[in-house]
Length: 291
Image 1 (cartoon, rainbow, N blue to C red):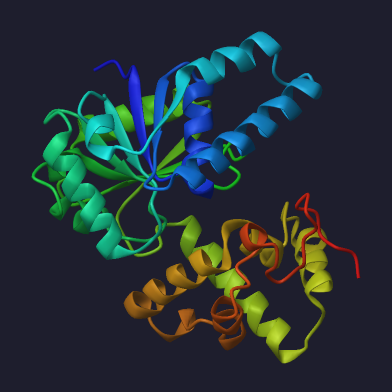
Image 2: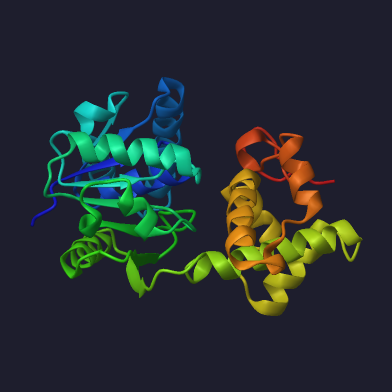
């Protein structure tokens, strides 16, 4: 099956990034959200991203124009999925929300298309059970920032077919991504490790082991990570990090119990870059405010 149209559901951090690499791959892409403001924010951010790529000679002006000719937005999920070749669900990691979205997509999308979820933790078997096509459902887990991170984890559910895995792999490769195929288990490979490292960093911050800056610096320079775990949490969203940890704590036990300080930050609305403050404070252009 040739994929010519992709619908991405959810215009948050991950959804807009997925839509960008999809359109960049020359695929007609529709980004769907219930919020017009969120869609406008997504387009503004992706425009800035493309302009920066042009300035750095990583993208030609003609390629940027072609990219945006392929990228569309919609507030109407039913209409957007009624004539598409692949749906990538990228809404927040909340079971009830994903269930609602997947049930709606399943009801209105063509019966032969694949539904992929960008979930970082939730069972693809469970997600498939929300539909009447579990053999066509799998996790297609991208990483933030999507335009820079090369990996896509493909996670099979109990009934996911080989054909579904192959379709997702081929689409990921068109987006210039490398893939790994993972058997279903809570947290898959990357989320399990990332959540544990990020949570431990919060425990160290809470215990006064070192400052946030020095914890991140130690991990980057000592372990050769491209980004410190606290900076990464701010980029991903501390609410997302907490939701993932709660799920892993529930399914895998005490070693994933969320750090109380992380829970405090989320309660205070300090969610990271998207709110202007998380572990770090950010200026209006998104850079860390030096103390």
